[in-house]
Length: 247
Image (cartoon, rainbow, N blue to C red; front, side, top):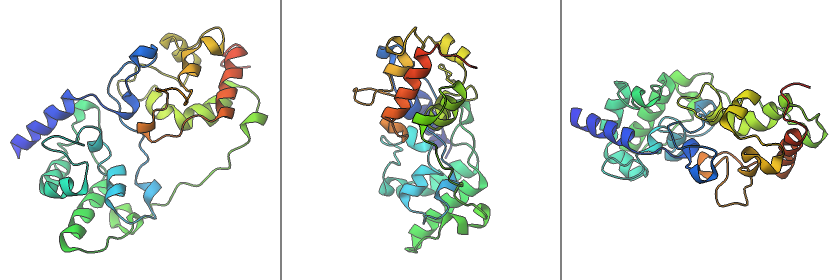
């Protein structure tokens, strides 16, 4: 087990993460670094049965950033089942994911999701829904908020942050994200990162959100939807109006 821990730790430390750390050095905007995929959490899957895809999106979310291939791969159901005991041992002892890499230990709910999934698979039992687990009791999908028509909103930084940056950028580029190098939750942070120009056409933050390009943000691997045409237009108008924090 100690040997497996060492191997897993070296693998985690030595590989470049995907998702938020999508390499865009060529664009001069985001440097490669370490940060995790957006944390959708178990609550988003409360009404779903515990399938392998659900496990990958919740309890094994951090694992998927480094262990999709190689000796300790767990990217497929067969791979994960083959080393299920080792996975549970490492997770329950809080050795994985390694805190030294900026990850938090799994919650009790996430651990129970993992334990339930492996136990059900071992006996060929149909799995329950996440909200039916004792340690995930009361887990309900977050309430849906009606999104206003962004084309009719005042072009302010507050609206930009609430309706564009928060849902599509800040899970990776907020000031509280571990090892973040490009902070987008303040105008000052954007200026320090050098992503704002005199106009939108000269601004890296606007150009890099063009999903028709080969590389764009948020990257497809992050699981986040690309900015819509209206959202990009809102961003463009805000930049062209002076990129002000307050009106």
